[in-house]
Amino acid sequence: MSDSSSILRALPSVDELLRQPELAPLFQRALQCGGARARKELAARHIDGLRRAVREQKLDRAALERALEPQAQYRTLEALLLREEGAGLRRCVNATGVVLNTGLGRAPVHPEVAERMAEVARSYCVLEVDRWTNERNQRDDRLGALLTRLTGAEAAIAVNNCAAAVMLIFQTFAGGREALVSRGELVEIGGSFRVPDVMARAGARLVEVGTTNRTRIADYERAITERTGLLMKVHTSNYRVIGFTEEATPQELAALARSKGVISAFDLGSGLLEDDSMRPIAPVLGDEPLLGTALESGVDVVSFSGDKLLGAPQAGILIGRRAAISALRKNPLYRALRLDKVTLVGLEATLELILAGRGDELPVRRMLLEPAQAIQPRAQALAERIAALPGCSARVLEDHSQPGSGSAPGTWIPTFVADVRHERLSAQALSLALRSARVPVFSRVQDDRVRLDPRTLLPGDEEDLLAAFVEVTR
Image (cartoon, rainbow, N blue to C red; front, side, top):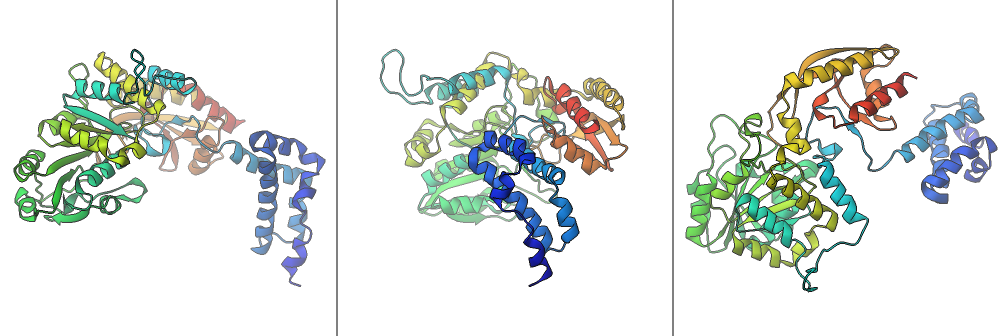
């Protein structure tokens, strides 16, 4: 028998661990957190961790005996339990300075929008019935009316995200046919979502035109055949090709498609909306294409995200010519991709705020538009409060925020940050401790210091951020 096998015989069984009175409070918490199965899983994970450490020769017999003492086991199990209790979706503080932070849920919605979403989630709602005639209708009639009113498009629908919108476009107009896409626009976005893979799933045959850096309208014209169903333009929202470049404009693509009797589409990704009632954010975002400009180009369909620059819940929005939008709606795939009631009302409420002239109240727009000189005193106040805590020092530095989520890559927005150091913890350890707080706080680590950008703090976040530091310094 090997030495490790002999040592492993000292490990308790799951049932033995569950019966230890010193550990009962932790297992009771686990029971309340996830039921009897969660309690057993917690015990099993603890034992498996010890078994693995022995097999990897990280614990000898004496070290295992110490690890099996009640206080040591309590600490280990409590750490495992805290991870279980802290798992899943929950509110956090975004102090990274990345406005549309994909990992943190992208666009936070307006408080009034959140209230509307919560109200619909906890009650019955008028979803697919006309309240006056009591006859069934389409769940997104109101959304379509708001989108056409705001953008000037002939018709509009929405699905559950922009990837789904692109899939629906390819399947509807090029399923079993060809779709022409520039080689320079065969993008991959987060989660290994690649345009060629989506096309294959949609049953469309990809025809690449032009080159990576130069694609002319003549390249599309030469590639069109009787099997062509779609000319697709994709905004390279998460990278830029610079230097010796050329691309066909959406106007050229729309005109060519009409002359050949095929559909044209333009996927914008972020969907930058400019309205007369709102302060322009286009100057902040560089050359990010405007939604209105894309629609005015004459393409049949324009697609964009709801939870990026629009500042609404996650959705893939499709606007354009009535005939094209009608074809998308009639595709059976549309039903599989359609919005649920909570997202639908969130989109409606967001659009109503914009149409009411209150678009600048949306958190994303407010964050992107806030000037650095307005952020500096907030950073100063934050740094002073953190520096007053035991073991912490903080200073204010000039820095840059980012739009995020593939919006305006390479664009940096001037800001000021609280630059923090802890006398005992490294920057990585402090960052982890902040993320482990009751309300997780996400920060940036740079030059072995933790940086906190007030640009992305929502009302009330400062207090939760400081509470996290208090937890760390106790």
